[in-house]
Image (cartoon, rainbow, N blue to C red):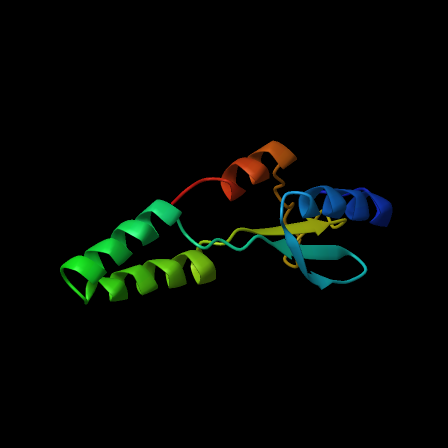
Length: 107
């Protein structure tokens, strides 16, 4: 996300914190935030019921789904005052609505 100055970065960061994003890293020109995903509760419950009632190895599918959700599907947000990347190309920015829509999307 694009911020005009450090106060704007802090304001955006506070707004994202209200939507359960946590700060991962902070420097003078950026704030990196992340929202952890744990997966869909319904999928976890169904896998656990199947594993307990019928097939025990289904629990590994449940663990794999949780690991995928937690480690790779958790959205990251970079709030920065920079307008160009290291290679000199202009950066593309998303707005708050796009970020919150992606963060709340169920897998």
